[in-house]
Each structure stands twice: as structure tokens, then as C-alpha cells.
Length: 172
Image: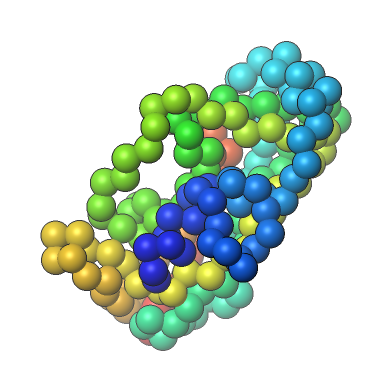
């Protein structure tokens, strides 16, 4: 996976010619009335109202095979909600607990972010992960060991409750 692909997956701007969407990976138009109403919903309720899901195109892969991933966040309430995140990263994914399949530390602005949803809105992102894991100490990308591995996605909040989902894939 190139650095550009890895960076995009966490909500940073997509590369030119990539999926159309806003800087967080979602194709959306701002509705200022919904945004304002969503901010009136208490954070505890907003966190529970949004659910996450993650799916892959297959259950089994050979080492280094690309993995097509579909991520979705859905607001289950019939009113808009807004989830405040502690940093600019709104959501992220992990491979066996390693953020964006890397053990490298990421530095993002400490300024709070916000993930807005319209009533019953679904936000969906399709991405391709090249199946490699970064080992920053060795400065290289490696194929994961054969066996069961976990892919997870979550809204970038500190601790539960937070919208999150998990799935497993098998590397053979």
C-alpha cells in the first residue's frame, strides 16, 4: 500500500482521480440546518445512535492480495446527530490492532473534529487495501503471517461507547 492510500483511509483527502468525496472519505453536501440541529443532540445519545459496519469482498486471501473493504456508518435516529471527536481524524481502521495496518505513530492536529449525520443517513466508503503491513522499525511493508486476522473500523473517539465494527479475514 502506498503512503497515499494509507493516509486516505483514515479520513484525510483522497488522491486526484480517487473516489469522489469530501476530505473525510464521504460524498456529502453540507446542510447547515441539519448540522445545527445535530449539535443539540447530547453526545452520549449521538454516540449510541450511530452504528458502524465493515465488510470485505472475500473471507480468504493469499499473502499480499488486495482487500476490497466497504465501511459504513449509519445514524439510526429520525433526527440529525453530530459526533464530536477529540482530533481531526474522524474515523479510522485497524488490522490486528495496528492503526491503518502500520505500527508507525501518526501525528494529526489536536483540534477537535465533528462527524455530522442527517436523519437516518448512511455514510459509505469503499477502499482497497493492498494487504501489506508497515513495520516502521524496519522501514518496509511486509505480508501478514498466514492465519486469522481482524479488521476493525471505528469513529475516532476515546473509549466506548463508540461506533465500531469488526470482521475477520483468513490469510492462507
